[in-house]
Length: 355
Image (cartoon, rainbow, N blue to C red; front, side, top):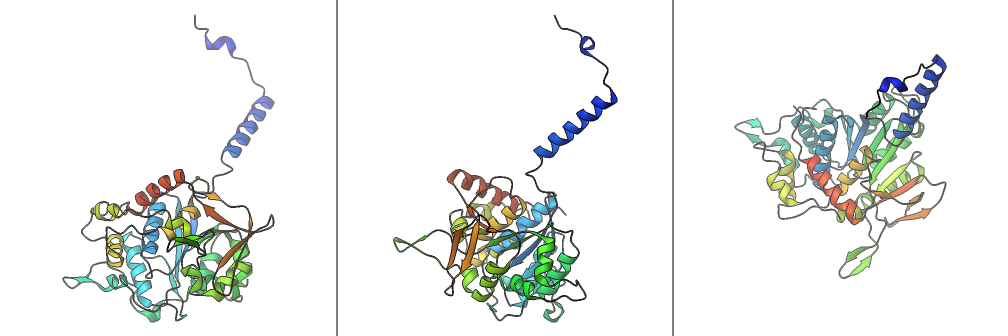
């Protein structure tokens, strides 16, 4: 026979109520301790135009923002070609975010147009296929200026940076003096405002090549070794590296390019992919992995190495030395995580714009 609940009711004093409330608050705080604040302020630093994984990663960011998980506050570019900024603006506009600040460097590194940046000027019936308003190279601000503004406007300890190109812009940021944007020099501004740097660069395991395992000097490092050395030695906040081996082992399935982007006649991500290396090519997901970790470090898509220090040799080789006081760690990936990772990357990259 059921016992009426009223038989177990008893009056609670104000003191008991207060204690119970404090206990509940404590439990909720403990449960949420590992989850970062949603709407992560995110800066995307990219060499977009040199490979297509940058483009897929940018599409991912817009999907994550539409879901309420991050806020793209700026894009800075380390490929020295003005069409890189125009194409980025076109992609941002496609996702309804054409107002996002974009900054460029003038380093002379990888100035070629590449295979797909020309989509920024592609016209159909006299109209831009992908509308955008960032067309005049002279009007595009310097990347360091854009970075300093984004950081100065942010809450302390809140910003996450996903660097998926060369280290040029961030190394220059570290060297920047105080100015009218902020009285803080670059390194102090980073230390005050940045929570995490998630970087696609380097390699932390040997890579198969011609039937043997070899050390790999990764592209994002070797194209600007001095800046990579500066960043590895001087960046003052935690850094998590996604090495070459991570994206290499988790290729983007070409079937998605052929089937998942057909909700619109023209899609900049799919068209860029096809122009760069058409299906049935499965492109490694290097840059996408750093973006996913930047926004979702707590969701178990990856494991992490022990703490330590990454250094860059004069020939561009990256090495890792374990240290309890080190600020650096690198991503690790097992077979079960890999399957879940690829599914997440496909779904986020191919999600239709919210507008």
